[in-house]
Amino acid sequence: MLNFPITDGMELVVFDMEWNQPIYGKEYGFDVSALTGEIIEIGAVKYTYENGNLIRGKQFSRNIKPQVYTKLHYHVKKVTGKSNSDLLNGVSFAMAYHAFRAFIGKAQILVGWGNSDTAMLKQNLKFFDMDDDLNVYFLDLQPLFSLFSGEKGKQRSVEFAVDFYGIDKRIGFHSATSDAIYTGRILEKIFEQNKTAQVLSTISSSAIDPDVVSEFTFVGSPCASQDMAYEGARAFWATCPICKTALNEKIKRFRIRKSEYALLFCPEHGEFFARSRSKKNKTGEFYVSSVMRLATQNDYYLVACKKEEFDKYGASGAPKEEPEEETGE
Ligand SMILES: [Zn+2]
Image (cartoon, rainbow, N blue to C red):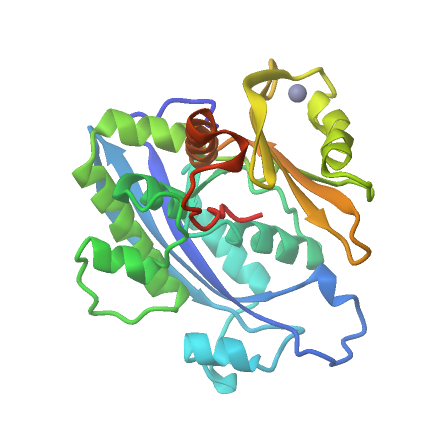
């Protein structure tokens, strides 16, 4: 959640990145889990908020010459249309990142599509021994699009949203710069087509601080029954994972089909979305996989929908089972 209001003159930077992946089975001389992708392109567009409108500003674009994953992974090649020789034309990651920081300037919010870009950026900064504090909020536009378009928790691509709003598709997709431009256009449409106050409050409640770990997971030990398995996650839900203060239940936990949900509250850290799913292991025992995270707008929506269904139909859920909504874990 933002700790300041969005006011006139405030800047936002919409960005996107492309990264290359390690080639499976190849020996790199380090643990590849420390660098699951090496950034090869950063693209961005700056916006200024002014009286309910977004004013489109300058663009940013840098190609980066990778240092460790120097051969394009076939999947990345396919998606981005880049070739190995393209990689040679880039600048170093450090140069590109410093230029990007300069471009961000006093902007306090980064906007992206999907929640993987800030984690990837931090991973690259850490790997290359640079300061990995981003010191800027991050807004994932994908769930916001779902909310405002009535797509109800579905994960849609940038291209889907571009088509939804009838945005001109003259430039290609899947370069960081073009996807940042399109993501910016989608943000413009969300502002144009909805009440400003509603858009601003949704942005405020959905933006996260990427420098703070906001998601916590727990996997319970195997149990003979499902009830016992759920019981195992109770201690995990009892205290705030950040400060260990006892949590209050804003929405009391309820079980629907194979998941248990709750909205929990810490006086210092705010609201947590909590969900446990019961699973069966190979020997037929039950265990839970549980997640707790600082609640985003999409999480409120998800828990409210499930609660409504629970109140109406009980633990078995609506008779005609819809596919479980995924919000990404
Ligand atoms: Zn707390």
